[in-house]
Image (cartoon, rainbow, N blue to C red):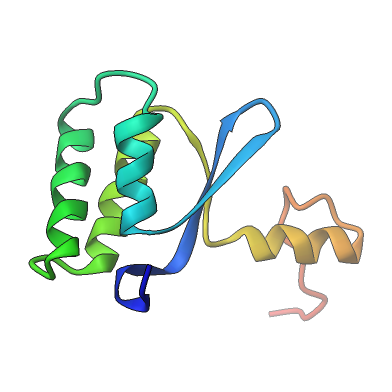
Length: 108
């Protein structure tokens, strides 16, 4: 797949227990939706499928296809790794739990 159809950031989500999937662009998103979608879809699925197909012809942007795909995944119940994952990795390195933001030592 050429760079034109690639997402700026891959979409990472949990397919089933311990099986993470990473989708890098519209071709992979279309393939997943057509072959591995867990149910018949719905309105968000249909919309994501349409936007991804249009992105192949440059009628819609590739990033619009990414957002539509993420919305459809979320609606179908997939656990999606969001863009803030780096915060949890940083918290793990610093020894905090990652569930509470670090407190500032500065007084206001």
